[in-house]
Image (cartoon, rainbow, N blue to C red; front, side, top):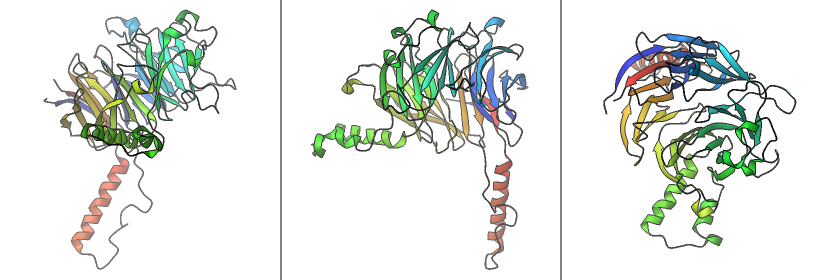
Length: 421
């Protein structure tokens, strides 16, 4: 697979671009600037300058395009954003002006901000993730009218899905099914057909147990692997395949052990990534029974360098056959989704690749790079090379390294568009 850079732009240091997302028609590219807390809308071709700017008063948590967006229909050209201590904002992609706001309130009747956002497949509903709940708004009904779906009965309860809902994804295969990932390390599937219809969103709130289709805990508890092998710690005979399956399960439990930050649906799989996780995991979604023996289980993993608290994105391309994974080591890894085989490593970036978006229609890949750099105390010119026993060459080498570290501390990010087809 050949790739070539079409256009690149740089952010103003020390700010960087956070995430990237192509519009459904592939004619616009949306990203956010961490320095100015502004959503930037680009046309993915030279001269590659922002067409629109949508400023937020505080750091931006999440944003997404309207799924039926079509540039030939101005009414459909909208995108949604969530920022700290702000309502959900719906922006016009033609003018950059605010179209509508959706306000979520906490128990103290104060506005609270969503950590994740997602439109339903038809665009009629907006899902917003909060702590221990998901709020559902009607797109055509701005304001505070919404349904609050509690993912756990109470704060102290051990039942249900606990923690901040940090990722949401609607299934393109199973109608009305959507997935929610939490910072507590769990992924739950919910079915809208088991609750009140959309027309009654402002009515009575349904219980979360009526909506939950299946739940799976990503970070297995200590000893779970031993219990799976045999009760009472009994040693069992293992053939080669059983041993490989056990080793794979232990790898998943070890490497996917933190908060869920990304979810994407494939044909028969749900892909997930976690904070500080060194891999993207594919979960088999073909059997969604309640029995523990038939619950969704991990089938493949796609390696990356992910030892960072920053959200690292991934995306599917080529009709779901290829998986593009952003990595901390300044590269994008491309995998065959069906086999997990790495087929290419795209390099040429100078920092962490945090934003990944693929446009199958035009065969383009958008990559946003950058992260916060914190120089250690005492680093700077003249910090090293004080020993008279060191050679002149060693001193010069240290000075060069210090200069690179200083440059890293002041480095901004880049937003690039590549042709990959």
